[in-house]
Length: 102
Ligand SMILES: [Zn+2]
Image (tube, rainbow, N blue to C red; front, side):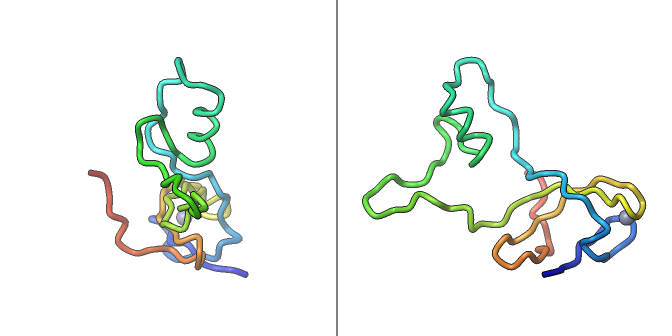
């Protein structure tokens, strides 16, 4: 399955021109004082102690990664620019109108 990304310099290009740079995880929590499990959660799920976590109620799978995710991409076969985009992992489609910072 292929899809396209929008490079801020070149415009829409096929995904094969890009290298995935990882998911935007937001600010890094202070590592001192984090338990191994807490650190793992931050790495895997961007959960930090005291932050919003999925409900642990009965029947909940505790999995809410269906939301949009922000990702870093590198246009290696193009202009060589790193950029961040918002993508819906359910459809692999870019989402227009990244809410931006703040
Ligand atoms: Zn480019």
